[in-house]
Image: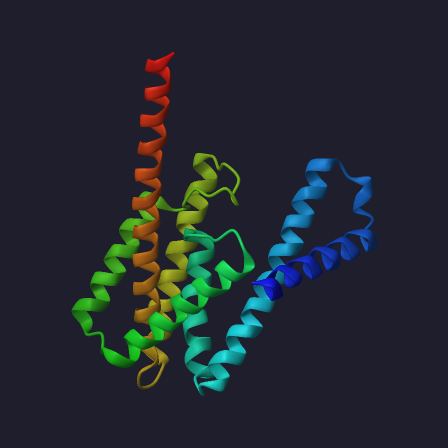
Length: 210
């Protein structure tokens, strides 16, 4: 959509303005690109959060949205997930994630069996796949990867502790948010596995042709 394209251009100008204020022109090209990317991510994430907050406030679901943010964003930061290339795609994906989690929480009451199943799946995913490889992430060594696993596990443990102090349906929101995160991580890992398989098959075909 044109409005989101214009929005991205405005963010580009804002990022360049901040970089000029910080005198980043004194750095090398790679560092400048990293700073610009970080600024664009911060701007887009903040704007996306405000838009989502406005939408859920309009639906009188602000507190539910904030609980889901508490459940999903911290652990997703360390575990990773799927990403979209455009601001519009990113916004739609986030809207779907929070909308599905909210719908699940309001439709189903997660019992203890479901809760511990979600925890078990997340523990397995943290051990096997965290952090999920992405073009937006650098290549990490074993020590750095263990750090992401430890941080993800810490967030999960903190959430299990917090939910004991929340009233009524709010613990159910946390479990729903974690369930959506677990499903997204599983889908992303499966997609990346098949994508790598397709790339290898294509390379083998090209090698045989040569």
